Length: 339
Image (tube, rainbow, N blue to C red; front, side, top):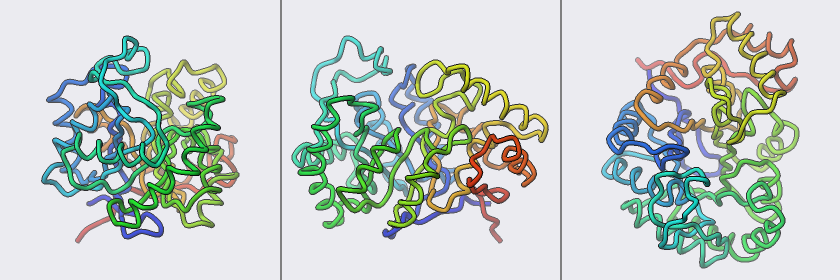
């Protein structure tokens, strides 16, 4: 068995259908032991999970440093992000921002041409690598910026996009896109440029499928691929109690209970269904759960090998637990047989 790959539309880049989200390696919500981080990523690469996504924001540089150390000399596909520069000086509230083990830097938003070019060069230095395959604009949108988003988006539209396009045209990156938690930012971005791929975290999952009504049809029409991040909705679909990085409200908890009841009836682990579901859609080229240690990796590789019967998905649809137009995956969507 080996992982299937899917092409990022309009490019020559192919990604394994299961990738490695490296935000946890930056110490998201809790510090990660260096040896555990290295073992998790080394084992993932050995399992064929050669696509790794990171960002300067993750641990204020810690994730990029850890990722680069493990990818150096290996076969890989790598994405990182622009939109935040890292300036020297630790923040007193970095733990409150989700990074209790951050490096002594602080993020500064900059979506301009110069800011994006500098961010790209800085990432290469932190990674210790000479190649980045995909460059995402990180956290543009009102979810992050509120009323200030108008100014940031204007910087991207009038200046920053030109930097991304130049990096792609020159071959320094193979693809450009957005890395965000909201469909609205992607829809707005469609009006200002020609994108290859969107990394959409938490918005197309077993729990919510809103992009089927707006974003995905437009992506299909424009030949834009989607990488699905946050397939567990920040923990609620893998036994946690957080959704959207905060406490889950009661209506979300009830929906998860309903999903769990169906899973129990078919002896399907809820995380297995959550991981496999997004690959039913043709625009989705990869699913990248965030992983922090070998145990989480082992659980993930077990879940993606589970066979889920067609009747399971139909039962979810019959109970109004799936969008009526949601395509569902065939058996073992992550793997293909080898002779």
